[in-house]
Each structure stands twice: as C-alpha cells, then as structure tokens.
Length: 255
Image 1: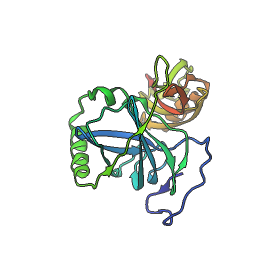
Image 2: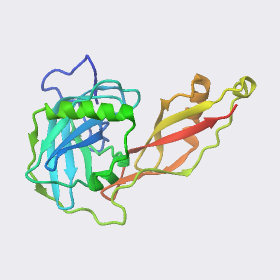
Image 3: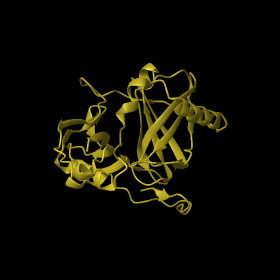
C-alpha cells in the first residue's frame, strides 16, 4: 500500500484497500512531550515509503481518530529514513491503552490494524525499557523534531473497551520448527544468529518471514527463513479480537 520513497503518489490519489485488508503500517515510537501532548511515529513490515491515513488511539473510555497525511514511514527492517512525527494535542492529560493505524489512503479507507503489542505495556504505565546510548540519541533527535512539528488537535469519541482477560496480546509460538544446520555450515564451521521477522495472520499462520538480522551467511539465513513455514503460532489480539502481528524468530548456528 505504501509508495516507495522518491516515488510519491499523486496528490489526492488513494490506493484500493479492501475492508478486510490488514494495515501494512504500525505504530513504532510513542513519545510524551507533555501530559496532554504525544508524538507518534510509524513503521512498516514492507518497503519504506510515504503514507496517509488514520491513526486510532484508545483509552479506557475514549477513542480518538487522528488523520495523518504524507508522513515518512521507514521499513521495520533496516529502515534508515527519519520518520515523520505525528504530534497530537489532547484536551487534557491522557493515558493510552493502544495506538494503531486503522485506515490507509487519501481519503482513508478502513483496514484491520497491524498491531505491534511490544509497545502496549508502557502505553499505560509510561515505563518503557531504558534505551541504549544509540537509541537514546535517536529518541532525542526525534523528540526535537516532534517539538518543532505542528500538532493535531484531538477530539474524543465515546468508546467501550471489549471485555476479555487480555485485550492486547502478542503472537506466540505453539510449535517450534526443527532447523537442521546445512552440511556446508558444519563443514565450514559457520556460526552466527539469524533473526527472522515473521508476520502472523489472524488464524496464527505465518504469512511471511523477512531477515531482520543476518547471521552473516546468506545460506543460513535462507534456511532459517524457509523453516518458518513449519512453525505454528497463535495470533495476537487487539481489543480482544485476533489481528495480524509480528514475531521475532531466532535461530542460533553453532557450526
């Protein structure tokens, strides 16, 4: 759905999005600039690009629909572009339960959220893991960019959360695939770790796998990627309903 960087769609253009399609854009960073001022960035499991659409924000009793237009969305894998911060001004201090993209295009057409629940816990608690020095520098640059960005005023709409034990969950592995070290790797004593970013469908099936971090050997990465089809997962959930999500699958090669 995204246009590749440098090949932006014509103004007013809107890609065809089926109502049951999943949004190929997810919330990445959530930064608190003030109690009632938050900044969001997006990423995508596909190629980097530009995106327009709707960002949906949920609390325990309110829902906010935030339109965004022509923001830079880096790839979740090796995306090096600087994302465009979406800065939202709320009427009062806010505590979020979740933030997702629910529409893509201009005008926005609805799509099912691609929910990355790794970010859900600290939306409510505000307790994100302590970043590394490199990550801290990146977040500081992003914060400065956000403070220089014009904010969007948010208008609340009534919202009743779904009722279940766990409203937001990440995909889980039910059955690990057996990954056999190829003979050439044993003969050459290759070692390393391959990380595969797996996209998990609403039925728990792996839709695709992309090399998130390479072992340094293309043959090993290919073996790890092909093994994903034998894995079995349970889908993640968004507001109690199964949704498309991602899972980082790790294979250690010991030669």
